[in-house]
Length: 473
Image 1 (cartoon, rainbow, N blue to C red):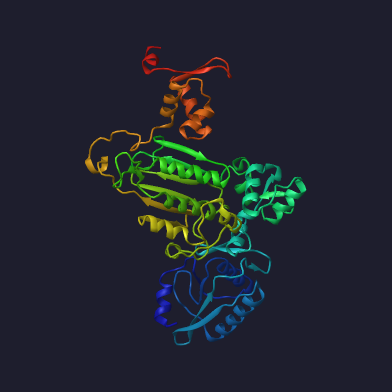
Image 2 (cartoon, rainbow, N blue to C red; image 1 turned 90 degrees about the horizontal axis):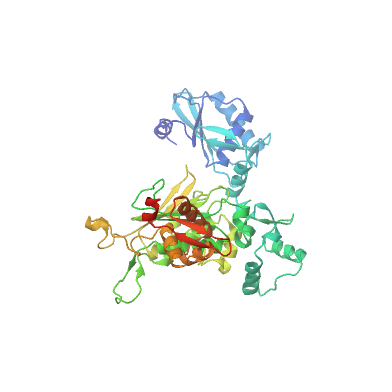
């Protein structure tokens, strides 16, 4: 390294990859700094530089002493030992700066001699204080994965029919009769722990009601009017829970029912084609469900606007993966158990690294945002302006079943006015919404005086109250 290059780097100041030290006298302290860099992204320590960026440098005797400290700290005071590099750069006659380069560790986590794990935090360092941080560090080093986390669910929480069908269709096996045999099989399949509980993969794939065990791992979907997020104004909304296959199917159905339909040269009587191919969203949803960071206790969010569709997954891209590498078909496995079972046909999965490429082949206008600070990954599918749409004509939009999805309350009122004796579960199936969404909307309609239930719970019926009646009352 030349003096000019050194001065250029120092002029940038300290950050999470550069640190200044005017001198080093404590090898234990130096070891903790090295461990912090190795546990993060690696970095450089400039010895002979003051915090404010001034450069007094080191004398020749100091250089020899400090290099010996560096060797001792890297070899004996960090576990596992680190292979670091040093360069002595002359800045003036008799004055030298030692440039100590610590690589990003390949054997994380690294400890100091007291067993403390350090991480870089801006220009400083800090101890790891939580189990979640420790798990994430092990995940980054491929020693631990979130989908193998134990849960509190016993194997009696299995969806028997779903698991039975999977065993029959994939492995040609019968459903084990005894609980002991089922547990043994689940453990062999890496879906249960040695203690007899389902792990996270087992819950997400085969539990009867995963949302009762892990309520945060659902998909929240909203169709907004216009192109901005509204606090209370929406055209369609629903939360999707259940095993991964059900979450996938329901989320895909939500997107498809909120897309425009276009004739695309087909006959007038032929059904319209979706404005964006369904296969695009298949790939993006599968990617979101199996590659999200399950160490982040948050749901996947699905937002539909007039000009775009956003699928927002908890967790930024893992390890050294970048958006450019991902577009090229390079992938890292964050949840290997989920991937292995999804590849057996539980979701429409076409191979590691191929999903994003397939989505881009089906629809090129997709942006990907890796927000490391907020720990989010967003896929944004841009919609084309439709001929005759309000955006292109400047006219007030005309509400039609295709252009503007009917709100859930309106669908409920219409269906119950035709079939007053329907149960809410039947209404939910009839309009393609979850029972929870229908119950929530029905409660608002009752409180708003737009409908009421008359009679007993089993033999009663719904009565729709016309707006005129509401005003007169």
